[in-house]
Amino acid sequence: MILAAGQGTRVRPLTKDLPKPMVPILGKPVMEYLIERLAAHGVRQIMVNVAYNHRRIEEYFRDGQRWGVEIGYSYEGVYEHGDILPRPLGSAGGMKHIQDFSGFFDQTTIVLCGDALVDLDITAALAEHRAKGALATVVTLDVPREQVASYGIVVTDDDGRVRSFQEKPRPEEARSTLASTGIYIFEPAVLDLVPSGQVFDIGSQLFPMLVERGLPFYAQSRPFHWIDIGRVSDYWSVLQRVLRGEIDHMRMPGTEIRPGVWVGLNTRVDFDRVQVTGPVYIGSSTRLDPGCSVVGPAWIGHGCHLSAGCRVERSVLFEYTRIGAGMLFQDMIVSPSYCVDRHGRATYVGDDRCPLRWGDARG
Image 1 (cartoon, rainbow, N blue to C red):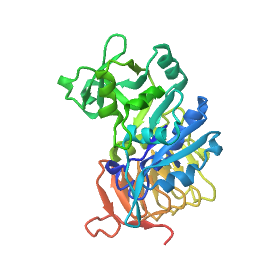
Image 2: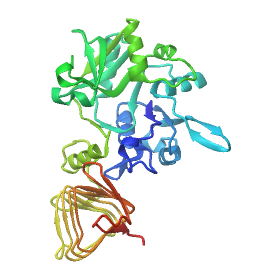
Image 3: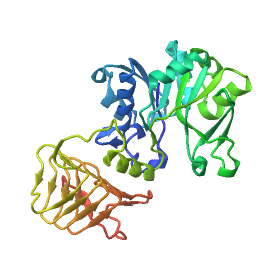
Image 4: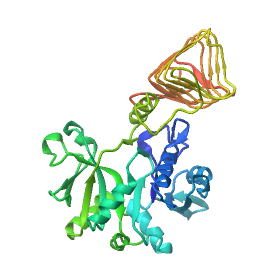
């Protein structure tokens, strides 16, 4: 089960017209990496709950055949006054909606949020879940104590059984440093505890119920990469890490024409008249005019145009972005209509208060 019905308000404007699981990493939606990971561990049936901008997810992934899996969708919304309106049911409520409709969850199910990059050994996690006889498992990651205020913290006993939770505690008050990663493993009986037709959340409602009733609910703590894209600043940081090659299973597309510089098809770049310092990816049909510079880690999406004398440093350009002549863009995410700095501050094309000039390369 991939949870993909959220609105992604904390990463706007990236999600203004795009559901959060479709935010691109190295030119691929973040959710695609999850599907590839699940398929690699033998998962063949995947349900996805959708709501906001649901067609972007459905039209991209379709039936999942391309990845060797079968994908189904469950839309959460209502038809009201002639309009179809998204109405998410919460992480647990969305699963209950599917269960009431078809009884889909009749086997052990792994549940993942559709907006994080993970390289979890799913096979090992399932084996530990079964070995402990768990009804439910939450996969955790040990985080530095000074960072606990950013996470839901799981408190366990010596056997790994979950005893309580703390939502974003202050470091001095934290009774644990195990952060919930939003990855869960459930047996079918868990869904019997979720009320039908209600908004119901896994973390804040279902999990406390499991603890209160003394059911076999365990936490696993194992080393793996878990990169949550909770805010725009997180997204910028993730891309910097990926472009530097710090995430083993993520590879740069295109052809490496010189150390640290990858290009797509049909690019127009005179490398004797531009400065490109890797790691940098230059997408297909992109043009770099003489005198411009690109300093990595940087991603230049397909169809972009970097005008003469401009400089792009440690930034990401979405497809069809044009950078004006002589402009300096540092530590930014740039699209044809907006740019966002590494701290999440957004500026839109046409804002006279902004000295930067950029736009749509198709214009």
